[in-house]
Picture 1 (cartoon, helix red, strand yellow):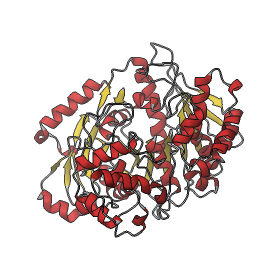
Picture 2: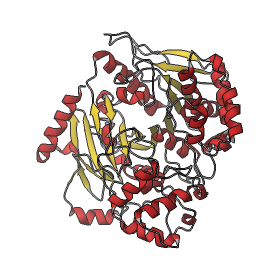
Picture 3: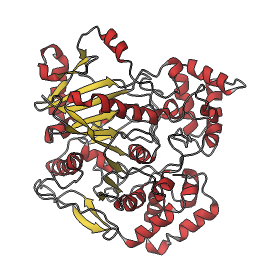
Picture 4: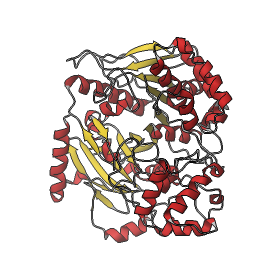
Length: 543
């Protein structure tokens, strides 16, 4: 399962597409697509459109369902080459990394990558995993998180990875969007919904079962999973969910986002007196100008409190803060996995109060003071640990307790603490945000402009990755991570209100590939109490 083998195989099939065998072709009724046989038992169909290109007048609007008649005409009944990754969605800048090329990517990006067992056909009714990538709703390229090796390990599922609009292209918001003639709130989030609707219609052609769809995401992808669990979409589009390191960013109102909109429009040069005129100007502006504007908004030029293009409470799909909906019992009670890494935070520095105020602009000074009292300094080894716990629990970690307790009242719920540091990290004692991506996706380390570097993995790391993949795909196949786990892996006990236990996921002993290092622990009572307090701050944190 070495990366070099995977990519070499992909290259060979890409370079000789005409020689591919018929099992690499899938017929969707309106078009046929040629996929890459990246392993003998795995085919990857890359860049399959699921919606109309959101170009011109469709910029800042909800996606339109794919016009299959248009696709049929445009392809001329020829097999479409789907052996190469498509252009990713236009990226915003990555925090802390130099901006090399603003606006890398394409607006014509509403596509999915589909990984299926070779020879899978309609009627196989294989369970389906739909993956929503992270990146703060600002960046993310599905190519950097490939799934060929997941299917190679377990050729009894179908996996779909979704491209959705990011940053201002996906999440521009202004109160005037309440009139749909102007535009639509949360266009990037609605892209995800449209992808799930496309999966319902067409995944059976790849051997998948639309009744057995699990949604999964990490960071902003985990936040998206949480939103899908609480939103007011009328269709039932999935049956299970996995939420990794849920990004508990504020969901502001459109009015709170308006100053950001005004800055963005002015930077582009769209200074008209009315919002409809501004939007018309923005829809005609070149991508490069919009990219510079969105980067400047998030990199210090904009001085307002809500300086990022994120989902908003739109009054239709998203009518409340997710935590409020969860505490009220207003969510889809499907089988759930939810967890976080041991030491993650999205803030940096030493001033806890200032960091919380920056991350949660609506959180009052009085609320911050009360929050700090719940985390007394004498309970921590040092100031850095206290900083990480205080910021990390509000920003990410407490989703595990909040969601775990709510879902456990209704059905199978499993929680975890990921405890393996990213081996490329400068501090091997800290298990930071997104550390699991390294193991799950062939040693990936994402960079700017949709790029990544894949690092070689040793035998112990590969063995640990196989454990993680087996747990995840067991849940996809059965709703239980234990049904098809590896024999060396411990039983992952459910999280219940009477027994708040979780699995700790970590490597086995060095130079070992047949001994698991994972184990079961009880959720600490102090952590549980703190997260109950954090949940009570929902109006200030807006998450």
